[in-house]
Image (cartoon, rainbow, N blue to C red; front, side, top):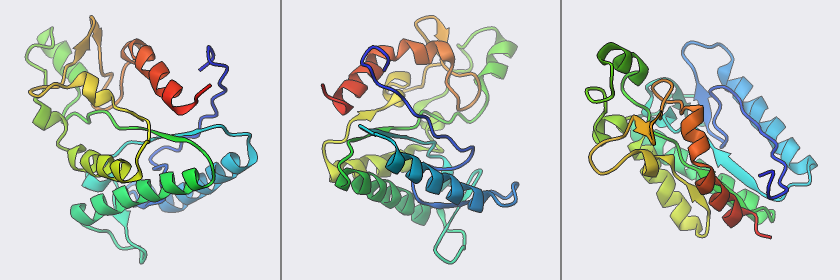
Length: 212
């Protein structure tokens, strides 16, 4: 971004999706309202800044119901199929609204959410050999939501996309090492070293998003 003369304004709210879905945490009181405030404030930042483009990056484990619950308009929790549809609709609406306002929008898809913490397994066994998850296991919590996101993006057309999963996983498994560095620091957060190694892909992504 710096090499391209791009200033990044980061907006992040713990446990709060970027798109307009209602989320409830069974463990945190007031979580839904806090996320609504976060999105409203983000909207004001976008409206008030001299913005050239917007990147949407969000965890997509929400529809699975494993940690959070997605809610309907009446505040009732919905099942995973309905939650996945709501999730994709919210992404399509959010990207479409920003684009209708004249802003280019790119999407960073979520990385795998592993069933266990690989760091603990690697520490126990001394290598990644017995810890590398199958693709099916690694994507169990996110694959349906990712497929729905890709379908929504496909309907919109011409949306730049960055997908870490395409680098981490092949058809059989999801790697825990990349060019000698560990990929994950826990079950779902990527290491600084792996992230830094993706700079060429990020630069290409930004180039497709912000031209000139």
